[in-house]
Length: 182
Image (tube, rainbow, N blue to C red; front, side, top):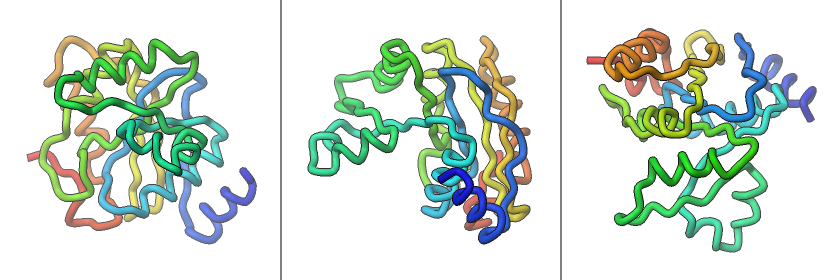
């Protein structure tokens, strides 16, 4: 399956993968920009190529549905997103409960244009004491770029500035929705 995924990714779609996912059992994968549903299959292809299990979280109700088996099989983890539950703490707890957990997340929180990211992924990394691996989906250059692990500090503004700079100039599938810091 890896060879087939790599062939589709490189020969059919014309993409390249630059960088290496770290050999760590736990980290957050921050994927930017997230402008289209096409990001999903690119992510699936990359996951297959690098042979690294990656996870995501979704509302727990999805896992109680007839498709619950699929969500678990594909790396999903159920999360209670009710108002009386702190989602950041709940996700950080998943890192504590599991021996291996690599959470893929889109800091923008939507496929539409935003000028600031949601901060949950950052506080999850801090609470779980895991690094963030920044992954750029650059459609303009047909490149998925993977950064070395980044451990958050106590300076939130400096950390976000560092991450914003990494993604500067990266163009999503829908260019006008690409992230740019205001």
